Image (cartoon, helix red, strand yellow):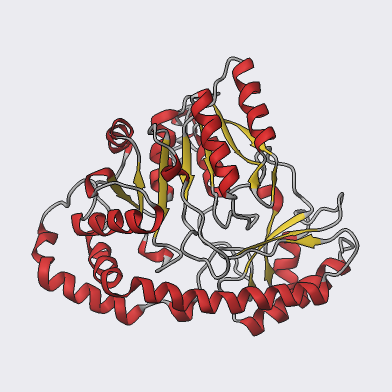
Length: 398
């Protein structure tokens, strides 16, 4: 009997097909933004779960609060008040599956096909994919070591307005930016907020990496610099506890939160995981962050030292981030590291993402690589960067 074919039934807004299964991971896995596996607080999470089950476990028989486990939202609200000067309560927070689900909720709430969204010239590919999924027209802003250049940002805003497409919002990762590693300066943050207030453009601030600082001084959130309610804010526990916990959060003006709740699928986030994260975070999160930052500082330094040793070629440069887990490597103009990525993964067991994966225009940055130093040991990082350099030389791009 002939197999049934669904092709003719697909929605005009159906997502593009993706292959099933997992992608190959390299021995030297500089591709994916994993944290250090040895610093996962497994015992603390088990103890947190035990406490949570003992105190609230029978509530698992009920569907949880639609915005997420209330004690965890209370913890997040207090943390944001203390660390980011974001003055909110638990009622102003929706917990999501990581930060990706809240970003998806915002995109579904605000975007129609053809709407303009402003982003950095290179920015987190997961969000770019979500924005493209909803038909957004992405317009990139030139950046430097201090973040979006103010002149470029205003020009892009004005251009969109002149085209009859006032931007729906700006998406930015202002601290330890993914993939470029820089942190937006206070002056640039103030300028961005002022421009957005002038032109009536909201901001979606993604602060997922802000706790991963091992040098320098914290810079206040965009949210705290705005007094008009135009900043929406997402972050998560993925990089400070574990991505496998799938817990993040959103805060925004009430009208957006209510609409976002209507777009949220799957009900409340996992209460079982929320028990563990809440009890662990209450007692141990600050000390745990200090521990992981000490570990990641050593790894960053190992990668920088290896780059200094193996990549000191004319026309080659890389970022030196004060935190996070990303280094942005630029090879000579005109070379194509994207075309040989799969070969190097298969042959040399080194993984990386080419810059074009993060490009607002989808094609720029083929000469760039995002290197994540979060997962491998310092010794493996040194080995892997040497192997990568040799492979790039063999392929004629270094």
